[in-house]
Image (cartoon, one colour):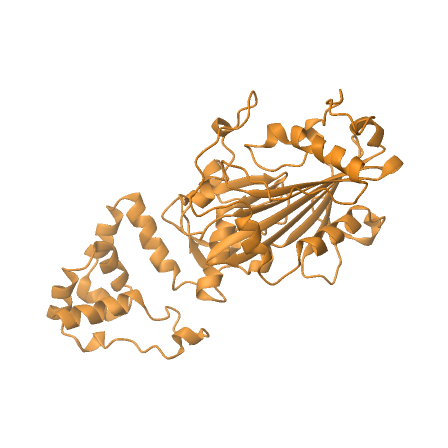
Length: 403
């Protein structure tokens, strides 16, 4: 009986292809189904008594014979299970359905096509209704871009199960430029993703070009330690995280003074700074162009976890919650993870194959000061977004301010 129960469990954990098509995954090429059809109904029913109700419902889907033996009671039991159990049931089904994924918010299998490419702006992004109004499934750290938990979930599904499951990692690689006519402000966003130790790590870089703003924002006396009267306006600051947003201005002024004192093109901290709340590694840079203006840049490295559940602490700590931002004083210091040190996320990301930080910065600066006109790009249906025609793997978008 124990051997028979083991055969049934193995068949449940590794079900056959539901579409009766040969698998292209080499891991599944040599797999042979267990001889369940040779077992009498009495034996199957005896083993079913030892299985969880969710497993029994999945077992009934293997073939018509098992469905007839087990009966419809398995489905009735699933309907009366808790929401968490039903979500677990849909996640098991999604393993054999490449074009679908389990929703972490509702016990439903959504088609992968229901999640639009994240490279579109929020006004054109298709959002699943079950997570439309939930802040627990959206990372708002990209200005007008919103990274959904479903994007991470689908990328990790492709990583573990191969094509055609999920979406490719390259789908999260993106570059966009926005020009604000009213403020005469040009902003560039660059995003890349890499998988390290089964965790999704992402590198965000943002540059703001402020033409003819050097005399207003830089201290007139660069050797003076006194804070100038003019501060960085909020809309001229790069976005790091909800815990540091209120204090970037104080961190930028030492960089500006160091830039003027050293007269070099870089002004970096000896060690990579980190947010003690969300454990994000980041760096700030400034570029004084003299009479042409000022460029302010920020690069950050984030670890979003394995994409298994939105309750993962690595995902939750990056969400924008109002209770985590204290505008009247410095951010509260939380006890960091024992395994996390300054620059560890950055080191893990940069150790992988791909464009280095120096190459990315040089490329983005050249794009920021590019004099190419919008007439050389293709207009999107909403009349606001243009996609640059480029041989590079990453898409390059030019977004005009709606105003």
